[in-house]
Figure 1 (cartoon, rainbow, N blue to C red):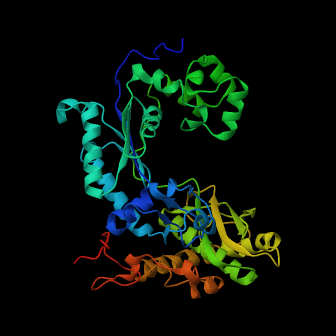
Figure 2: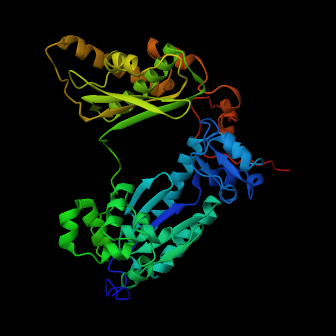
Figure 3: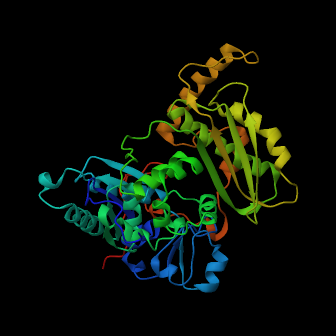
Length: 438
């Protein structure tokens, strides 16, 4: 039974999953060849590893490792501040290249995407495998670092395939060969199967992806949720998970979190950092014309312990003044004097369209309308002159001091190197080559 194919087909659909290898660190190596072949780590401003090159991985560096631990096992590591502006520009170039082959592209993250190649063999005059190879070659060449590509009959199998040979691998799994790849694949390695589900499945004697694929559909429906049923269907060669190719125009929640160094026990400074996060979150909410009915605030200590609290609002609003005022009692409850904090965060919940002001018994309708009009003007000024040109007094301390002091205060070189006409807030949307040219 273990050797019996789960499907008799080849590629009833052709889905590729493309994953940038060590994306952030690779972006740094691509624009500065002096970093090639060296253990490069990004995340210096946070004090933990955000991304690491494969040279650093081979030395034992892992994601979220603290930088003082990195220095012990890899003293020659090159620690860099994260340059998300450049990573975003290279990510856009990545997706643009993939769209040269197919318009059906799902941007799954800054460093990965799914693409549907189904039906393009005649048009492009090449097999699906040849298409995947050509896309990979063009990406590797144009961006200056490698990508791992998986081709399969659906998203789950394509995701398994892209991780089969990393880095710089290309694996094609036909539907009739799925069982060959699943029989040794631990169930926890399947995309969408989390730790809790893994523990439950293992208690049921399911150790591998093939064990799961062989379960009866009735059993899956009875014991698991709809998302797990869809994964089971895709492991059996069916295609049920559709690509989400539309540009994102709405959000179920919005989160903003910032780390600051050195950690602080100053209550007003920490609250100012939270206030700044609330302002940033509501800027995004207003951009998409959304408003929350509740939000969560949380604090993280120097030793990475978190405490948070949910706050319910009397009416939906994306005006930061309302959220900041409502957050203060919750902040006072979770803040511990004498404790050093390293980050604050906010999550806006239950977001809905905010086209029409929602009135309530406790707020003046004229005041609500006036505040909305005020922030339309504030947002226009920010768009023209920079996000933090205007800010509330409660965010003063966070805006007056650098987010990070000491060596963590290093800024990305792109921000230090301005072209004619650029400012600290406004720069051309192009990545910069940083190598010295003799």
